Length: 351
Image (tube, rainbow, N blue to C red; front, side, top):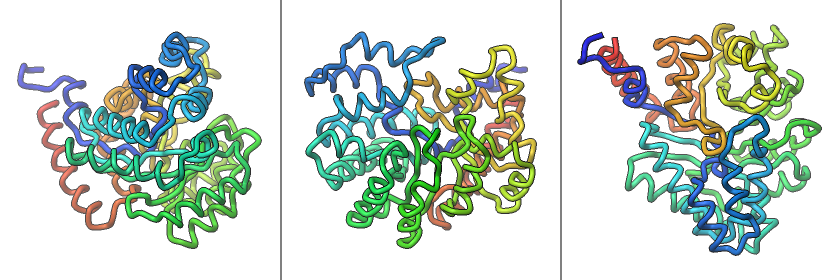
């Protein structure tokens, strides 16, 4: 390799990227969390916060961290504006040009006296400021807390309808999937579809049955899927996903497989290794970058070094993400052409 060639890291830094599966509360910088905890009089100590950012054999569960943020640390609209702005700033530094990210309003609404409109407007302000300062575009996906009641999920969608905004394009569903199957929130999804909101859902993430993936498709009618690893357990469902061209957003640092697969077999047995090879349309994402200790570049590097994909695959993943995004058709078409040219140009420097 000559001195003129890019290293892999340099190549990954330069190529344009899109994020479709990232949780706002999973992006909070450590020092920001400490500052907000002190500002808002949270009982959460600096030592506890430090432990949130350690990815050891027994890491603090991300859901526990989210509950601490919801119940203790995020207490006014500007807190949400700030973490939104900082997330998009950090993403833009790694050539993420567009992000569609999750935010769970239910917990913050229950823990504070703030209104849905105050919270949503604060996030939108952070999005607008980041676009002005860094050029990154973004869309917001309010997400159902599947540990809450079905009525809480329906209420969230009703609040979205009452405060409709073009940058708030659709709904998701996340948090603990075990004992909280997709059909629990069928009424919420029916309302979202009725008012032409886009839909996605976490399914098949925690070793749960492929039936959750099938239910998300058939009962909820989702436009894309998040995780969906257990789809591989049903070849007929894999074929359906391929035929429908549905995008699956995947997470190389997914906690479940880090816990359940041995270190020496993790990369070989992880479903992500098989998904694209089976013909599924996938796109890799950071999920909770602050707590998974990952960033967009590391995420893409893992697809190569851990799961054995190549440079051509990275381009396909990028195009999958653009095609499966919720951008308007014209913008999407323009970006597909522009980003393909940029990718190819950078690849010539890497070869």
